[in-house]
Image 1 (cartoon, helix red, strand yellow):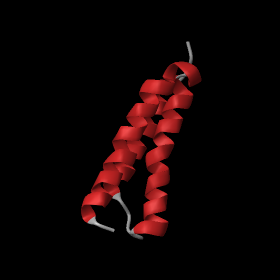
Image 2 (cartoon, one colour; image 1 turned 120 degrees about the horizontal axis):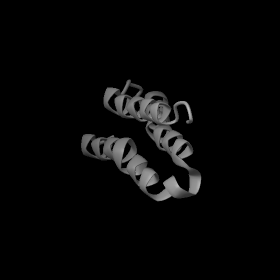
Image 3 (spheres, one colour; image 1 turned 90 degrees about the vertical axis):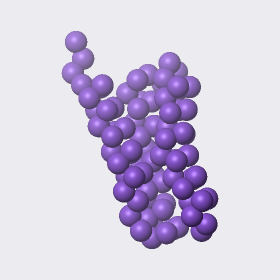
Image 4 (tube, helix red, strand yellow; image 1 turned 30 degrees about the vertical axis):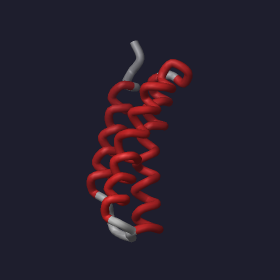
Length: 80
């Protein structure tokens, strides 16, 4: 796969799509569900990339996915 296409897909799956999900679905699904859904996109992309495309671990996308999951956990903490 061309490195320019791969970089574009990494940015799209790691940042653009999760941000779009957060902006568009937050009111319909609620904060916690939206954060989990947005975090699953880069996590799924890491697995697809690791298992099917390059067969190498993608640290940048993994970091974005882990950060999104951690943020979702922090926001969904104990309800008052």
